[in-house]
Image (cartoon, rainbow, N blue to C red; front, side, top):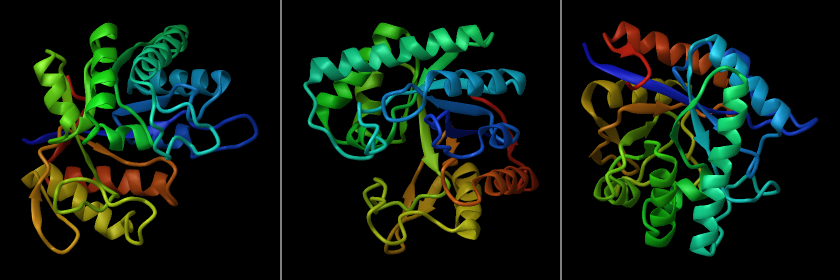
Length: 249
């Protein structure tokens, strides 16, 4: 029976500003990418998310991003590479402390937003994050076929290849930018794409081309409209298609 991990970006509320419904989504996913305070998330909220994840036996991953609360980490920043490496290590360390306080642990790193997108092609930033993964001795969840995946493999870092249920792909395998119409798929298309990734390792990209997406984990964005309902529907659809849903490893 084929198997896939379902992950979601969580712990992103900040003070009075609420982002998503972590408690509800954690009933459906098997891995949680928890914000580390740079692009989103405050310590109390992050700790609460870690405790709920532990309650549901959901695997926790660190979700570091650019130091960009105002832009939610979705704006590219031309970082000093040494600074980016250090800040990534710092964020992982902060989440490790909060996860330990919740009786659980951080099992992998998945970069957030613009940093994640940069890892597909930016050699300097990809190298910085890979070195952070080496330093923290954690696997790295990255987009299947990305530059970061190749650099991680060369450095001996375990990688977790990721696909996206609710994002449209370009023909070159990168994601259509959120600034473009159609970048975020609707409910029905997201369900179809999740099943296709899990059962065939492919997606239909922008323009109709079929491309390979050999993913071990599928991301469900926790901040999209109807995220909780979509997570439940995708999990049920995968089960109906004969796909087991479980955390990697």
